[in-house]
Amino acid sequence: MDKIQKDINDALETGRRFNILKMFSVAPLFSLMTMIATTLPISLFRMASEAGYDPAIPLTSMVTQLTSVEKGLIPPDSFFGFLFLFCWFCYICFYIISKRNRIKTYLLTQILQLFLLVILYYSWFIGALYLIPLVAIRIIYWIGFVLSLIYLIYILVTKQRARKDYFDSLNIKKFLNVILFLWLLMYGINLFTNGLNHFLAYLLLALLPISPIFLGLFLVSFFKSNVVTLENLNAVNKNQEKYREEYGYTIEEWYGKKSKMYKKYVKKQRGISK
Image 1 (cartoon, one colour):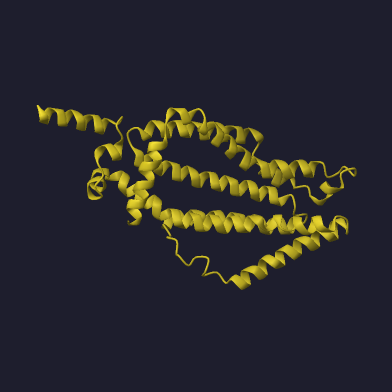
Image 2: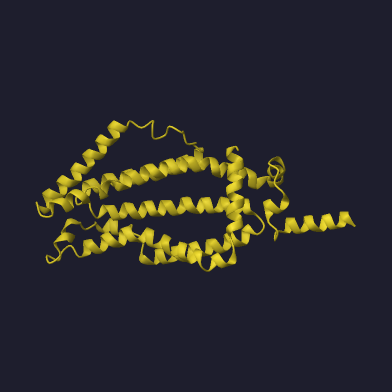
């Protein structure tokens, strides 16, 4: 089975799973989980930071306050409520489209998935900033974040394909040395700014600020691997009958019993039998 046929099978299988029952059960649950996953990092560390001035809660003194410019770049809480409704609305639209075009439905779900991953990346990045007390370090992180977004767009525009040895091509030893250096740097900054209290907590918290680096690497790899899928689905969507006949799918398997194409096919067969 080649990559195109695998993508077609995934698209047809996904299209079959859309039903009106899931629209009012699975879809709201998925939308809620998406909203929680994207808002939790920001909300959790923001609440900790706002409570950081209370000496009765020493643990929260480990976090820092963001600048007014950085706070202005944080999405309001209403955005995540809108995200919940948006995901639910998308599911409803996908359900309607799946009744006549399963390939297009799967293509749209893949695009939505990439969009939500970028939002999660941004949310986790903002949350991690609350654990970086030095503004200079946060500026470097902002530069890296912007460059990573530009690179993600570049991947989609230039249609860079993933290499099987993508992570193997990285110099693992140098990469681990950089991560270790950043971890020790964050740990040293925490000790310097807050003293020796909560020694173990500072050691563990030093891992969180470098977590966006791992998420960014995952996104780059994920985007590259999905470029091929998006290309295949787009090509199949533009010429569905050609691919349906080439890979031997029936009209019922491809479009579904409730589709207009299948109903036209049934009427045509009845006319021939008469």
